[in-house]
Each structure stands twice: as structure tokens, then as C-alpha cells.
Amino acid sequence: MKAKRPAAVVRPMRAEDLAETLDMWVATWQAAYPHIDFSARRGWARDRLADVERTGSISLIALLEGRIVGAMMLNPSTGYLDQIVVATEWQGRGIAAILLAEGRHIAPPGLDLHVNQDNARAVRFYQKHGFIMTGEDINPLSGAPIFRMSWRP
Image 1 (cartoon, helix red, strand yellow):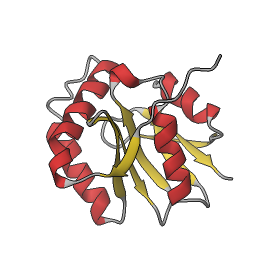
Image 2 (spheres, one colour; image 1 turned 30 degrees about the vertical axis):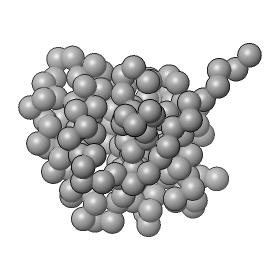
Image 3 (cartoon, helix red, strand yellow; image 1 turned 60 degrees about the horizontal axis):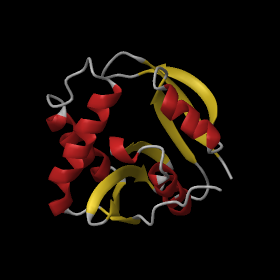
């Protein structure tokens, strides 16, 4: 029997959600890349969020029982998916898929993203959800190799 997806509520992020969202972002990325100090990158994440919103992106959060368990930054006009992040304890339980479905609704012509090549879990997730590799690049922040991936309906 297939596990039931959680009944997460997805809504636009509000100013009062910022601290909790950043806490989740730091903890999640720290778990994925323990050799990098993501607490030191918290300010960068806050600034990145503001920058992408200034250029037309929207930030959405996924809530369960009043707690932020996921977030996504997406530009509706370009379909560029800057990030999906899910709290470590909620990974593999459908939260990212719920956010991705909302992203497809917001940008129905298609979605594009970059993903770290060494983030095998994320690469598998996007492939499972119909994204294909469209190229390779280098992350300008870290210098790490990244894949360009796209989804079209």
C-alpha cells in the first residue's frame, strides 16, 4: 500500500516566516554537506532570497502542523526554480513533490533549474519527476560542477 502524502499547506512566505525558513535552510544544507559551514552562509541565503524576489521570483513555504517543513523559490515568468529545500526529518515523505506540483501550476510552460552534480538524491528526485539533463555548468559560489535540468509538460 502506498504511503499517504502529508497534507501540507503551501502558501507565499511572509516576513514573519523568514527566521524559521532560514533555520530550516541552514539545517538541511548542513546535513547534506557537513564539511561546509552553512551557519556562516545564513546571511547569503537571506540576501539571495531578497535578490531573487527583486527579480520577479516568489518564495513559497510548505507548512505542516503550523511548522515550516519546506520552501521553494521560483520565477513564474521564466520558470526558473532557484531552490526547493525540505526539512531533513521530512525528506522522502512527499513535501518536495507537493512544492514541485505547485511550481508546475505557477509556471505551466516548464521549469528549469541547476543542481549540484554531487547531490545524487536531488538529481534522482528531479529525474523521477520528469526533468532531463540539458547541460553542465559550474556553481559560481562554490565552483562545484552543476547540471542544468529542465521539465516541459
